Every structure is written in C-alpha cells, then in structure tokens.
Length: 398
Image 1 (cartoon, rainbow, N blue to C red):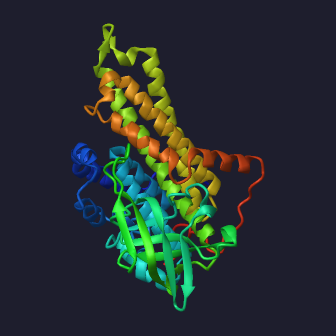
Image 2 (image 1 turned 90 degrees about the vertical axis):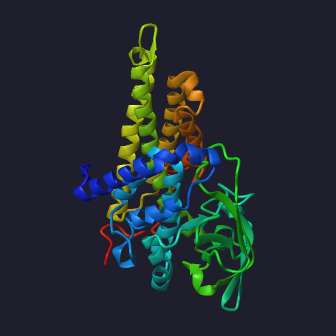
Image 3 (image 1 turned 120 degrees about the vertical axis):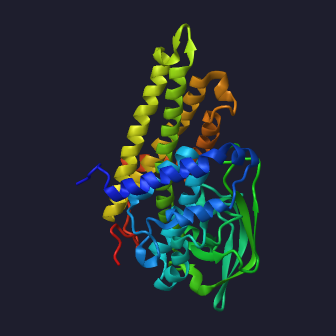
C-alpha cells in the first residue's frame, strides 16, 4: 500500500538539502552560469553533507536512505539549478546504481564504497558522436587480450566527463552480435590511454561539467567487466532506469521554481491598474504549473515506491521522466511569458530555467524515445523480462 506521507528522516534530509542549496549554491548561480563553471568545493560540500551517498547501502559507506529520499534530494537541488541535480543523476542514478546492481562484491568494495562516501565521483559513458538513442550503433570497442580488455572509442555529452574518477562505460565486445555484443566496464580516469575534455557553448546547464572522453588503447583489467560479457545493453538500460528517475524528480523542482518565481512576480507586477495575477490568462499558466508539479511528483513517488519494493519500474520511471520533463519545459516557457521582457533577460532566473529545461527533454532517453516506449507498453508489444541482477529494494540488506 502506497503511503504519501514523508517520514521524519525524509523530511530531515529534504530540509538539510534545501538549506544547503539555498545558502551555499543559490548565491553563486548567476556567476557560475555566466562563467560556465562552478567551484570544485561544491563537490566537497556535497560529500560532507552526505548528499553523494545518502541512498546507498550503509555497508558500503552510504546513508542507507530510500529511493523516495533520493527523489526529494534531486527536487531540492534542481529547484536551484539543474547542474546540481545532474551530479546526482550520473554519480548515483547511472554509475553507483549500476555497480550496486551488477557489480561483484569485490567491485562494490573497491568502487562503490568511495563513491558512497563521496571520496570519488562517478559517471556513465554510453552516448557517442554517432550514437545516442540507437545504442546498438555504438562504435567503442573492447577487445580481450589476456587478463585485460583494450578499449578504443569516444564518448560524447558526458556529464562530469572532466571531473569524475570512476566511469561505467558501454563498449562493443562482439561486432557481429548486435545488442548481445555489448558489454559494460568500470574504467578509472588514471588508466593509460584515457583522456577527457570539457564542452563549452551549451544553451543550458552551463554551471555543469559536460564533456567528452576518449580511450586509445585504454587497458582495463578483466575483473572490471561489469556483469557478464554481452550483458552491456541490459546493464546500460537498467542504469537508465536509475538515471531517469532522478531526472523526473528534478523536474518537480524545476516546475516548483518556475511556479514560485512566477507567483511572486505576478503579485508584484501591475498592468491595467491591477496585479497581473488577476488576469485570467496569467492564472491559466499559474494553474498549469501547479497541476504539473503535483502530477509529476505523484508519478515520481509511484516510481520511487516501486523501487523501494524491489519491483521492476521501467514503464513507470519512463512515464515520470517523459511527463515531468515536458511539463518542466512548458512551465519554464510560461514563466518567461509571465515575466514578459524581464523574463527574456538574466535579471530574473526564469530565462535560465528555460535554457536548462530543454536538456532533460533530450538526454537519458528523448521525449520521442519515451513516447515509443510508452506506446509499446500500452499496445502490449513490450513486456519486461526479469534481469539476472535486479536493483535491490529498500531497506537494503546489511
């Protein structure tokens, strides 16, 4: 039975992250956005607060909190800026959850523990210059040679590419086997042949580290194979279930930010002798934001509840991501409209909200991919099969 009330622990974590974001991140946002970078101390402070591992098992140094709490953290961070939620998406949703679900005990002790403690940052490498939604088209190859794999290829549009220490990388081990010829690996930044660089000139999420990395005869120990050889497609798709959940939860925060800012401005700004909040078409946009915040939050709660129960949630997470990201983009567009000419300048944060909101409609499964996914479920063309390794439900076994 679903219970929509938050526990005292969940409220405590939510309030702690809200204070941290408002007091330490928000005052710097305009500067970081303009500079297309933010200070490295942010990661240190997130680690000190326990944010980088709060929902990972305590046996690996995490906080042991549940998936709903992860959603609340993502909401509070994205309410200030998308770039901070992105850290949670790639560090926890894509990288740490991938190792938690598919890793051996040795891999978890070696890699998940420092990730959970915030001593290391993690990310995920699937997208390539010529392969995004079509995962089977990836060109990165991994060739087994003795007790090593030799990786060659390039990954593009990778969050924390120039900052992360640990990478879950998807590569092709059998060029003739399609999806079944793909495998996953844990790659370390300091492995010979690994290089990364930042990407500048993005429309949004400018305060976040987005980049590319190349592997040229990068030697990866065979024990760093994540899952079994040929399971990389399954590993990657299951990682996306974690990443998409954090994106959907972040959308709640972005809609909320748009609503809060628009309510305040519409009560203060007057036209035709009265606050614009009294004009019906402005009210229509405000009402739509309020509706979409509530609907997206409920979809996120359902997906989080299923995760807590240890139930497969690909469909529900996809729906939350699809609806939430579309709704956040619409809310940001309406917020700019409500602010009028001021919304078109950086005097108010709504123009940044709009720039940031577009990215989530594209990454971690575009709106078009989510549409096709939901259609395949609705038409009975897709039925999820149990995975050999399922993401553990909560509470995590100790």
